[in-house]
Image (cartoon, rainbow, N blue to C red; front, side, top):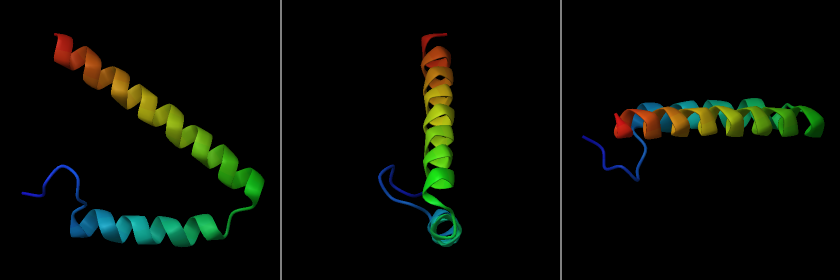
Length: 54
């Protein structure tokens, strides 16, 4: 099992693919994408906090 602070090979591959995709975005598209990622991450955090409490 991977340690929590490292990425699996599959995750590393996905990250490389994402890097290539992001390079093709305009600055406006990249900013919108970043904001959406942050929103999704916040939702994920909220779900984890809720599950830990219950």
